[in-house]
Image (cartoon, rainbow, N blue to C red; front, side):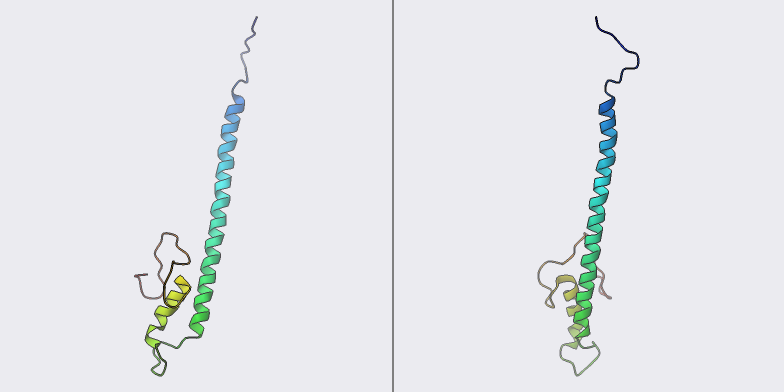
Amino acid sequence: MERYHKNSERGVATIEFAMTSAFLLMMLMGVFAGGYLFWVHNALVEATRRGARYAATQCLPNLVDCPDSNTSLARIRNVTLYGNPAGTGNKLIYSGTRYCLGKNPEL
């Protein structure tokens, strides 16, 4: 003879698992998003430092005595974005947004 209980706890474990797993999944995604945020921030800081170091060794754009002074801003942008003055290769950081360095919005 089977007994039936009014307050049976059948299926409670499934509901508890569903609620806690959703919370843990959100926490895990938050940890990954935070890690990506720190990685992008570090990469942007390093790219900025690289560009600043390169800019410190270049001539000012308005100096006549300096060779290639008219392209120094473009070379500085290229070092910051691509890691080399020629601007070849892949961008160091790409997050799907446009870059705006200086006055050139075409980057």
